[in-house]
Length: 134
Image (tube, helix red, strand yellow):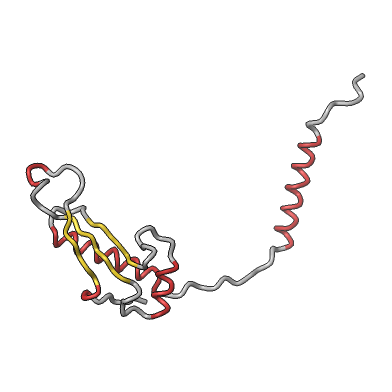
C-alpha cells in the first residue's frame, strides 16, 4: 500500500553542502533540508501513529521528519532525492505489520535442546579433577 505525500506539507530549506566543493563551496547552497510535520499532515491516522512510534533518528521529539540530501550538485536533484527518501519512510509504515502467531516448539526440537544440554554437562563434568590415580 502506498500513501501519497502532499507536496504542500513539505518544507525545503537550501543549505550549503558539506565536504569539498572547489571554487563554488562558499557561494552555492545545493544541499537540502526537508522538514515534514507528522502531526499536521494529511496522512491516515494509523500511518501517522506507526510513523511516530518509529525509533528513527530522522524523526524529532516534536514529530518532525528532517531529511538532509546533498549527494548531487543540483538543488532540484537533491530535492527529488529527499522526497523519495521521505516517501520510502512513509511506505515502510504504510501497511500494518503482520501479527505473529504464537507457536510451540516441536518434540524433536525439545529433544535436540536436551541432548545439547546433556553433552555440555558431560564436557563440564570431565573438566574436574581426575580421581583414582593416587
